Structures are given as structure tokens and as C-alpha cells.
Image (cartoon, rainbow, N blue to C red):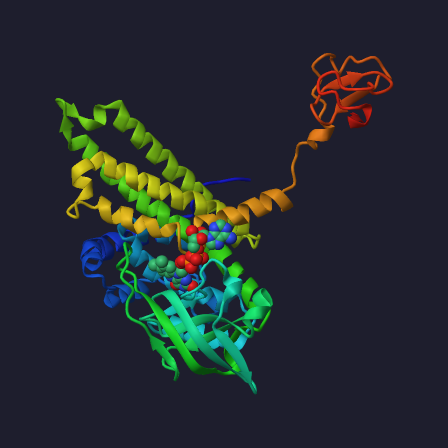
Length: 440
Ligand SMILES: Cc1cc2nc3c(=O)[nH]c(=O)nc-3n(C[C@H](O)[C@H](O)[C@H](O)COP(=O)(O)OP(=O)(O)OC[C@H]3O[C@@H](n4cnc5c(N)ncnc54)[C@H](O)[C@@H]3O)c2cc1C
């Protein structure tokens, strides 16, 4: 059975997130973008409203909602402000390695704390010298008795300047690549953790982005999220479950760009009529609408797969790639409809356009998504069609009414089909010898 309807609970959650976004995020979004700051009280309100940490497991005091519920929430938040949405959702990203880890004691301790009080947790694979290539992590984890000592720098860390806890990925030996990667839950207050200056950005300025330096940070054995050799897979599994939300950010931001553009097109006059009356503008709106709708379906499918316990890796990449590229196109076309006013900071589109630019970069760039998808299509995808070599493209004879016993031979080079007991001595089209023919 296939259904696209949401349950009454999901509709209520969507409504709650929408109301929160309109009441708490939209009014402050442009101000915090302008001053390049993250309003902690707003994040706290999201926590109080149950909008943050929706997927915190029930057994540890959370609401235990699924990836689908989280994408419903994030679409609404990002429709109001992608930067603030990124900061609010970041706890789900930071918590995911813990959710996926086998460390029950660690879950009890930190999920319990995050459920009980307003705590932020960030996620850190990236470093100043690497982002896409997670196997290239340099932050060192040295074994010291039962503990590990961390030394290195994590960079681009969302909420890194605000977070109480950090899911830190490191390596026991950079030369080991994937096999050396491990992960730890680190507390911000531990000795040796220091936070860099807020990184000035093009967009999503409402979200906090910093570097984190780890200098001789002692991590007790209990705080190991993934031992050496298991950290890389943990990071990839995390992304497979969080990428649909990045797609949902993109859907939300694009939806707002489209809505503002429709509103403007119905008011703005040119050549004696509304610009919405021009077919050129109508086609832009049609394209925006179909792109937003298509992206949402892909995001929901990926989220659904994750919630069914299926491996959502490919669907997550498809949805992230499509939705994030779509959002930039939609925001760009929305700005075109606004024309001059769209280019100013007094209208909403220029911020949405700047915010959307990041979607194609974080949690795996578009190029990385294409790498994942081409790898799947070329290696793992099981085709339905027979191999080209075996494909009989019968042009000269009706294959259904062929005389019984008459053989057909296909030239592997040019595709010519020859009928007879033996292949021809040479192909009459490409002149390759009989060895080029395959009996089909
Ligand atoms: C605002 C912001 C917030 C972020 N938040 C976080 C966070 O919370 N936690 C975290 O860990 N990271 C975070 N990141 C980092 C982000 O995930 C990386 O920026 C991203 O993965 C790309 O890495 P990079 O910037 O080092 O680019 P690089 O990996 O150096 O790539 C540079 C270019 O080369 C391309 N490229 C790289 N490898 C290939 C390949 N094999 N084939 C084809 N093209 C390739 C890339 O697509 C890109 O176009 C954030 C980044 C930003 C900007």
C-alpha cells in the first residue's frame, strides 16, 4: 500500500512547528541575519516547545519521533529562517551518532541530560583541511590506558560555540584512513577544549559556525561512541538519516521564496497589467511549484525509508541533491520575479537566496552526492533490461513469427541482426568478422 496522507498526530506536529516558525522565527530572522548572531533564547523556546530533539528516543525521556516527523518540522522552520532551522535541527545531527552507537550507558547519561534540560550538542567531522573526505580526518586520538587523548582542530562546526556536548570524530592514525576513524562524546567544559571566533558567512547567519580546538583533551573510555575502525561507518550512517532533513530545509526555504514571488507577481504592475498575467512569469511559478512538490516527495520517501529501518543512503542522497539544487534555482527565479526589489535587503528573497547556497555544501556537497549516486548506479544497481549484447533489435524479421529453428546472430559492434544457421563471414555494416557475432 502506498499513501501520502499524514496521520492526525503528524498534522498536529506540522501545525505546531508552523505556528512556532511564524511566531518565534520569522519576526527575528532578518535581524539575526543582519547582526550575524544566534539567539540562544529562541533555541531554548524551540526546546521548550518540543520542536528541538523530536527524535530523542522515548526510553531516555524524549518524544521518540521518527525522521519523517523531523522533516515535517524542519520544512516549517526553514520556511521562516534556514539559519535558525539549522541551529535548531543541529541537536538531531549531534545526537545521531549517540542514537546509533551501542553504548547504552552513554545514552542514558547524555540523552537523559538533553531530555531534562536545555542542552545543545554539535556534530564534528570537518576540519580546516578536510570536509568531504571524512577518511582524511587528522584530529588525533591517542590511547592512554583506558582513556583517549584528543589533539586537533574541528572546523565549520554548527552550534560549536554554544554546544554543551560534542560528537567528535578523530583518528588513531591518519595513515589508516577509514580504518583509523573513531568517535567520542566530548563535553565543552573539559580541559583542553577551546572555541574559535564565529566564522563570518554569506548566509544562514542566524546559525553559529566555529572552529573547535582540542588540546590534550582526555576522554574516558565510557565516552567512546565508536572505536577505531567503526567511526567512518558511524558518520556515514548518521548522514543517511540526517540528509533528508537538509532536503526538508531546502523545501521549506524554496516554498517561502515561491510564496513571496506569487504574492509579488499578483501585485506588481507592468505594461498596464499584473506581472502574474505574463506567461513568462506564470511559467516560472509553475516550475517553482513542481520543483518544490517533487523535492518534498523525495524527502518524505527518504525519511520513510529511514523510519522503516531500511538503508536510506541512496534515497537520502537523491533527496538532498535534488532538493538543495532545486532550492537555489527556485530562490534565484523568485528573485528574478522581484527584479530590483528582490536584490535589496528590504525584501525577503536575497536572504533566502544566500541561505539556500549552503544547502549544496554542508552534510555532503552536491558533488559528493553525485559520487554516491554514480557509485550506486554503476556498481550496485540491478538493471531490468538485458545487457545490450543480448538485446535483439529485430528490424528485418518479425521475431514472433520467425521460422522454427532459425537462429539469429547479433553483431556486438554495430548491432546488425543476421538470420541463419551460421553467422555471416563478415558484418555487412561494420565489416567485423563472424567472431563479432553472438547467437541471440
Ligand atoms: C556553514 C557551515 C556549517 C557546517 N556545519 C558543519 C558541522 O556542523 N559539522 C561538520 O562536521 N561540518 C560542518 N560543515 C562542513 C561541511 O560539511 C563541509 O564544508 C563540506 O562537507 C565540504 O567540505 P569542504 O568545505 O572541506 O570542501 P572540500 O571537501 O575541500 O571540497 C572542495 C570542493 O571539491 C569537491 N570535491 C571534494 N571531493 C570530491 C570528489 N571526490 N569528487 C568530486 N568533487 C569533490 C567538493 O564538492 C567541493 O566542491 C559546515 C560547513 C559550513 C559552510
